[in-house]
Length: 534
Figure 1: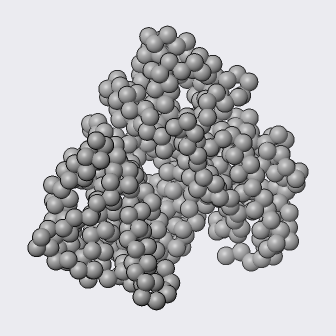
Figure 2: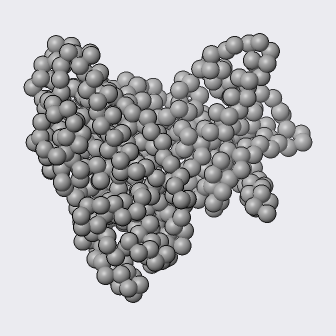
């Protein structure tokens, strides 16, 4: 690890790399040294707004939030090292994938940014999936575009550029209309051989638009596809002031291709090689499985994207994970306070999570559906959190906690069953990161049984996507002819520390029995949703 004087010199000489990720609730910036470890960070908190039924962030909020994050970082560097950031080796931008940001020829946004969170493109997603023979989720940019066409929205005829959030920020910084392949794969299907938009599907979509009276060519309005390490432009004078209005930051700094949060998450967990997987488990949950080849058939439950260097990735995306579990923890904390007991929240989590390891392997006849929102894997467009139990269930606290921990990964388990049993997908390693793994060994052991594979939690995984974006920036200037997996394995993670847990056979068998009940009782969840609609 670099010492303070070495870091100060690197700052003065502009040898550090910066990664910025615009997440759903926080914009975070991470500055990394030449040994790839973080030396400073900054952040800014923000929230999406529901405006006229659309979840959105305004372009003004995007700009001001980005500048606030950078200012926080620069202030921390000044405070810690007594140095001003004026130059950098490279910058990487990341953000929430998917969504819809259309611009006219003057560079003006035509409608408020429609984020991934909006589920307003069902008809378009269904029709495009049938047309392409390829799963198009509702949150993909092409689904938003086609839904706007179906809705006969007047702005469509004026679209001259369509991009994602990180594509927009990169454009503002460099003037370049480009995007990393991983995020492009969340806009439109990618051809793994050409590392570009799937040409046959582009032609089908152009014909579809023409049949609807829309005089646009899809590739004319889309960002250029770039893979990790390619030249994505440099910071312009206008871009430097957009990021740093103080005038300290110089123009001319190189930027790497902007990537989505899924891509930077793969990089931050060293899960970009074939047969690797990373699982993020927090408010929502997803598994990114890097494939050796494309899937044999279409699965509406599985999203297909790519790594930042273009390998095919199967994504099992789950809208719900720990929110219901957290609500029960809050209830237990309230109960303690009722009896005059003040307990640290982290201690409550640790004791209750650890107790779950003592429960019956199959949870003793208890069941939970933590559905605050719908789940496409189980074909529900809405959700109602539910807890159920058999009359003769072994109803105790250990089983109660174990039930909620396993059910938080229930949808993930169903998605992985499709990949394992129907597609024979093989996984050699799984990296776990997110709030579910904060209590050492608990969430990790349950995920190992769910995935039927060893799970590793690394100390660095908590640095998140901003660190992944900074690593992609470092790869662009220091890759030295290596592939992205080689760069990460040999230079970044060669001495990374972490803990690995293998799955327990009894846990695997117990979860299989639990999931049999889960599948049969999903009808109760569907009935609750339907009854509540009346």
